[in-house]
Length: 220
Image 1: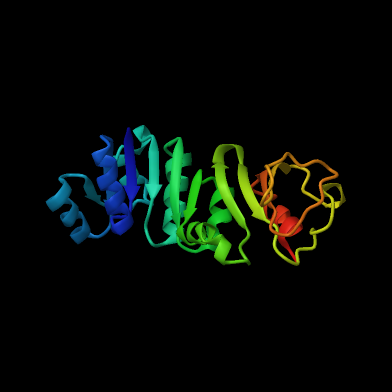
Image 2: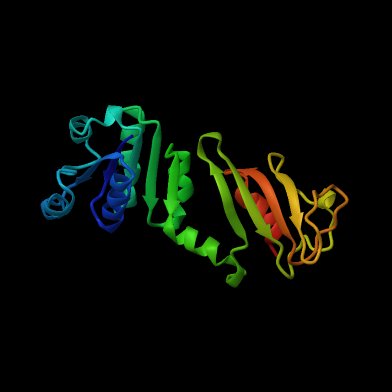
């Protein structure tokens, strides 16, 4: 598989090493000549000096035959532009972007990036049990379908505690598929299921309705 990585910093470097080790064909693009030289010294001719946002650079890199395009610089604007050019100018089927400011993650998704990745949000999701203000975890993202499987923990004091599901104003495109309750077997919730504090809900929702679902199940 031919994979292009924009950004020769630490993220791009370790991604390149891992992908090469798995047998992929990888090309890294970076504007810094010293970074390209460092790649050359250790990994061979896998890094080309150039601006990954420019059409001319991406043309020379053979972007039209790439199957995956990864933008991993420390500038969100560059990552977004590079992915958009790769996707809409060169037809790359899978674009992945590093999102440095978590507020930009949804913007990237709406503007066509297949897989925006916010390291900040990933860390928060992994320690959500210790951060009661972050009760929603994304378990699976289906970027092309704009669907997600999420887990929402119902916190003490949430307005939905003591209410049945049919009393809630859930987004119409969200489905509660499983309820996990301490000391009991997981069950498929119905409209008559009454929610309790510390219940965990597995739901299928759209990226657009994720926040509305969180507000309904986790707000106090």
